[in-house]
Figure 1 (cartoon, one colour):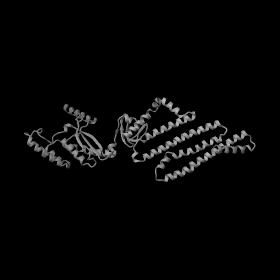
Figure 2: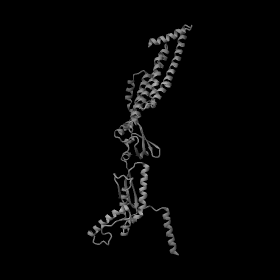
Figure 3: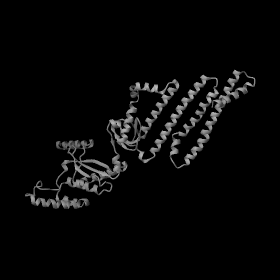
Figure 4: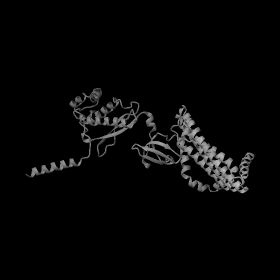
Length: 432
């Protein structure tokens, strides 16, 4: 290579000197001409690589059925590869161009070496990210937080790149800088605290399968309630149901509590847990004519007949004075109401029959007796779930009067106004 460089330089130098120029002028002009030829050659090489080979390769890749080559284009692997070839040509050509100018040669070669280090680092990073995209395209890794691991790889690459550039600029071995970094490890840990915590959290999240991309999570502390978009080294992005995006520190998934609805979504059922308050003053025993009237309800007819037989048999054997209603067993309106709701839910095609289903009393409060419906729909889709639950309570609220029950609700301003007005009118009539 040195002989070839010497031959090329000598050819131009002798050609110029034969024109009558002195040695110094021939030397400078030869250097300038070689520099111009170098730039033309470099431009031509870059043009051929980018405009011709790249276009041909991209068209060929897009026609192929495999996705790996598409990921190569997306992550600019071919683009960074085209940077290396001109830089390698420049590294080999600069000593020839600047023959006789050792200082300029030294500086320009160092600059090219630094550019090579940067280009090679970017190429390696793009190759790693291509590998990440290939993994993401497989079902096994679709919901895994791969971004965190590859961000760590990127940071390591950048650190190595910075060390090599420092070594190139100072002329010192990279081990010296590594030793200095070891001594300053406390500062490094402080600077990269969030990165280190995020990396550890990502490993724990992945190994314990706590969160996946696409999971619906709820984290009230950060105002997050929606689907996980990405899990990175430092942040987790959650798209809320109002289409806003909440950013959560990755390590918060380990240090704080959150709710993950993945198992609910996989189960195929979503829970209904809602109650309505019954006015306790409306709860009573049912009269015979009221029981006969409720027999007309198809869902309750067989139950009422069976219960009547049980009650009659029990009262005949255990009750001395059946005229007192509190003696023995009697049907209540609240009991039949609960049974009706239960049977209504069991006959509802939108209710999951394999999960728990209850209609139960809750602790009485100053707002009445809460009757809670505890069941599961057979869908986990939010709009459908809300529609099913609304239909159930529309029906339940509408049938309350059939059981001679009343719902409790706090009086409104209009109710208070009516009471005061009625009292005022009554007092007025008494005075007159």
